[in-house]
Image (cartoon, rainbow, N blue to C red; front, side, top):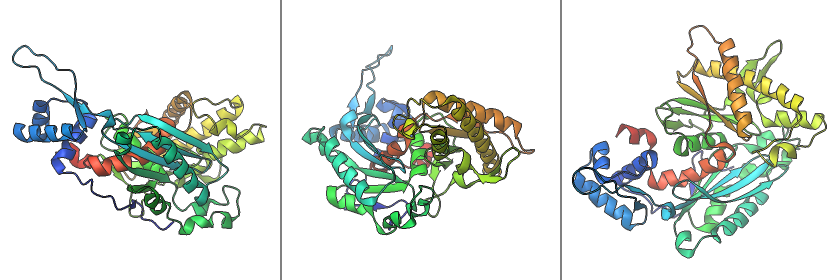
Length: 396
């Protein structure tokens, strides 16, 4: 795949926005609607500067007036919030068992989606799905709304050709990925910028941009998908590393009770659960067709949950030796009830395997769920065009 870890394709890069405008938009996105006086106080900008910025952003259709707040003295203050139709973003998730393309508005709400399950991803099929789905979703918008499409983000596992054997394929069946740049192809087809990021880091980015904003400044993030993956946030910034593949959490070696040395990917991935379900007489569609509701054999799910929790606990202990993060967030392609159960089990097991000299981090459920990777992809054009780097923003 001939593309950089954070590659951008497409010539439409005119959306470079002034620092102070990005600061205002970032602040309102995190805090919610704010009056001009509040923004001036929180940013340190002068009241006149804030007024000029707010008028410009309102005229551009990015901000809109909300219900006036009446105080005891003087004129009521008028909060300004993000205009839902101010911009639209597309996010494509390329998964090993499914494809998703989402259309989101400026609030980050999903306005439309297309989902497809498949045996494994083939470049031609992925590009075809993306083109057909983009056309389908854009047709739902009025011409004025289509003009506000800011770009497409792609969340994709890197080096897909390395996973042929795991998918039960011959290596040559995935070799086509090695020399394809689907981001460039889609940018040429649609004329807007296309961004690309590793799927685990993208899911973590969705939690950072759209998730609970009260999270600590440093946290480790797990996403339970076909393979378990994740991301790392340090000082409120997503850390992707030199190759864009930082926090490859599935590769962490573990040794479960009475067993051999394995990796987290061997016990906490949905491919493992899929194989267990098939062995018990079920079908893999029981996992992939509806992540909001699983109807799985109870004994199979219990065995998988127990091993996954233990594997995650050991991985968290190991990672804590490197980075002293305050919190761990666990999300995944699974029903909310199962996610809550997995987090609780992991917390209990983490207490049991606690290593001397280490402080156990706080464990939290993710707040995005099934759409984390696709929403993380959609956050790429949003962040690139409208927001400040979260680290710089919170220090402003």
